[in-house]
Amino acid sequence: MSTRLGSSVIQTRAEPPGSVGHGESWPPGPIAGPLRRACSQGAPATLILLDLDWFGEINEIHGDAVGDALLHQVRDRLAECLGPEDAVARLYDDEFAIVRVGGDGLASAVRTAQAVLAAVERPFDVLGRTVRLSASLGVAVFPLHAEDPVALFGLALHAMLRAKYAGRGMYEVARPRSRW
Image (cartoon, rainbow, N blue to C red; front, side):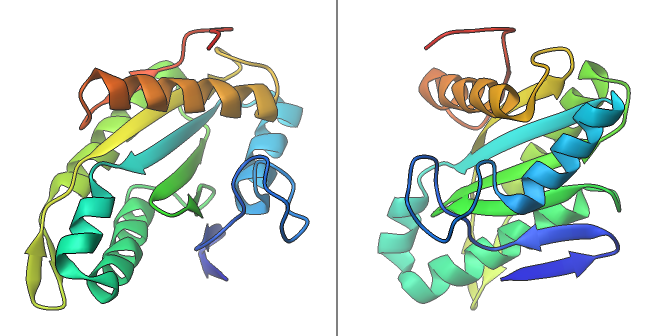
C-alpha cells in the first residue's frame, strides 16, 4: 500500500532482504527510485535505515492495535522530516527506510538523522495511551560512502546495527566500504 505526499511516496510494507515475496527488487521501489535517480544524475542522496528500539516490548504491553496505530504515526512523523522529492518506506515490522535527495552531503545527512531522532523521541498519543520511543539509525550518503544503491543500502544497514549495539537511541554514519 502506498500513499503519495507531493511527489514523495510512503509505502507501508515491503519484503525484507533475501525474502521471496511479491517480486520486489531490493531496495524496494519507493526507495530504489529516488536512489537510482540520484546515482544516475550524480546528485547527493542520503539513505537512513531506522529500527524502532524495544518495539516488540511496547507491542506486548499495549497490544497489537496500539502497535499498529503507533507504526502509522511513526511513518507520518518521518514523512514530516522530508521534502517533496524524498521518500519513506516501512521495510519490515518496525524498520523503515528514508531517502533524502540533494543537500550538501554528510552535513545534510546528519541534520536529517538528528531531526528523525527528535521526531521519534517525542511522545506519541496512541489510542489514548502515551507511548515513548527511541530508534537506532544507520546513515549512508551517495557518493561519499558508496557509488550504487545496493552497496549504500548495505552500509546503512551495517551502521544501523552498530547504533543498535552501541546503546540504541542514536545514529551511526556508515564507514566507507566497511565490512561485517
